[in-house]
Length: 64
Image (cartoon, rainbow, N blue to C red; front, side, top):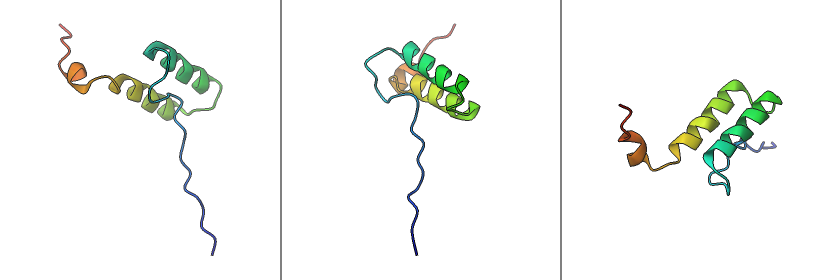
């Protein structure tokens, strides 16, 4: 019986890129517009970009 390798989707957003967060988001948007990513995959990647900052900084940010 043959076993199939599990398919894992490569994220459009690198874990830590040499660029900034905005360029990573632009890359995700370009790939989504080209049809390489579904809408949900693009949102997940953008969420990953936002959350890769220090979690304490993200949770304690004053939005007022």
